[in-house]
Image (cartoon, rainbow, N blue to C red; front, side, top):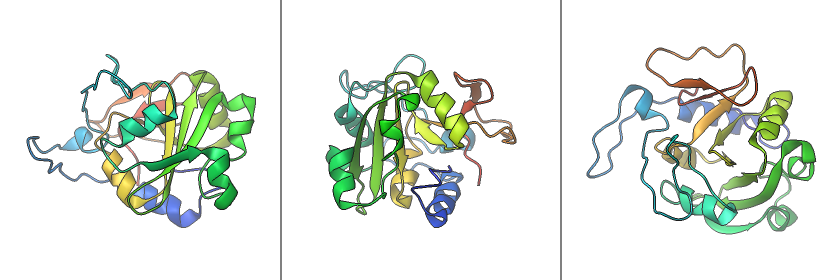
Length: 201
């Protein structure tokens, strides 16, 4: 998954692409191993009845960034949630969205940042208009993990691997992306963009 070119180094981007492309099994107790498409962004459709609820369409919803954090905590630590401005005050450009969250074209309602178990940032974005968000993503070339009304941008390898088990989908507008047989692919809200559980290497 390619993250914002202006905020994440090439090394982090390469690590992100590499770790999300795996075909590993899920060793959680009480669950069977996943193969093929389910090994990337599996289909846990459970709902806690509150924040981070999964919809019938499969994409999770969240009413605010605390709800996004609650959802992520099912799969990876998302601790110490602070507003984007508060985080940026002590971390110059470490988390995605410093400038984009101020641009109305992105349709970002709220931006916060939490840290994973390795103290790496995860940008949490609630989105008031997902079509606007996807339009801006297409124009910028950035790619995200998305729910129905939010997006996240993890940086740490461990968090990325852990989020492979979630119901988030990879949003890409890469016209050259070929999704292999056996993986899900559906049109996003913007022409030329797709949502998929396949992430290329």
